[in-house]
Image (cartoon, rainbow, N blue to C red; front, side, top):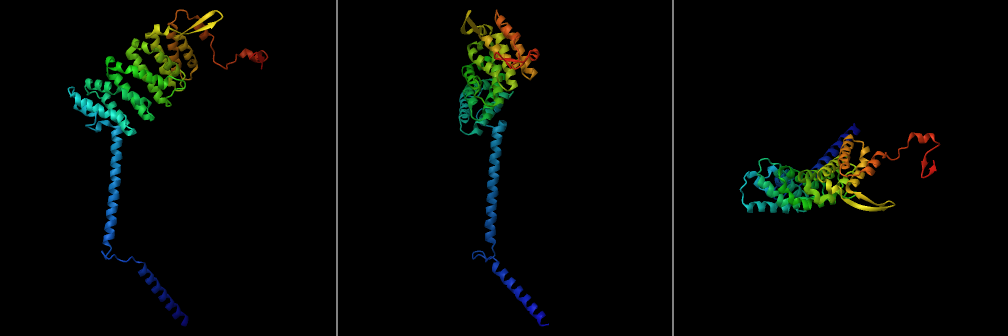
Length: 352
């Protein structure tokens, strides 16, 4: 009985100790607000402000994406304001103000602004309801900035600038596009006319070749003044790892052979030899550039290469050396079967 009373007394003491600890752990009410409602109100207010700031950030991000990806939803900005009016008699001051805004955005250091300006210009070019006079004035006023963006450090900007050029080439007439040739061809030569090409992206190199092909198909014989640039672009394109780039380069060579035959018959260099002087023609260098693509793994590239060779062989009068080179040509590192039955293979005058 004594021990049972002692246990009950100890348990009651422990309960009192726990009750005192709970009372001491409770927060003391504020002097200004005894019930603690003020602290909860401040906390709720701060939480509401945080939610509002987060909502504003989301809205800003959404508006930025819309301005870059879908220019039709932004009325009253630069050229899009004029395209939305669907009128061809706007004042010259409004047109100049719109182009000045777009020039500033294209020259901005912010990537989203440059992409947004190109997106609005692309929408203007593809808008079937836009007056042709607005499209023509927009291209002639902004083509310099668009061509400059072909060398932009951001790949998407370079891609968009080339797509803008292709869109304007589809809707404008040749007299309206001729002003861009003196700047466009040297830029294309700089980007894809050297070995290895300066342009690192395969898709952008393909767009450069498509722009070159479209320009060649539009202007034809007028491109004779830029035969040097076209020659370098085609020879570099035939060495590209992208099969579509090679295919488009072969198509350009075919167009060159059909429209600029006298230019391809020019002598590019004279090499002294035992027989005298060997004259090398431009079409001969293009044939040498086409030969490696005869063994390309894509049939589409091989067919385009053969078509280009057929057109180039008709350019010269005496193509005996070129034909002999093509007939006797074989793939490298291919050993005839009879070499294996003759005691070995000869390499550099030695039997291996």
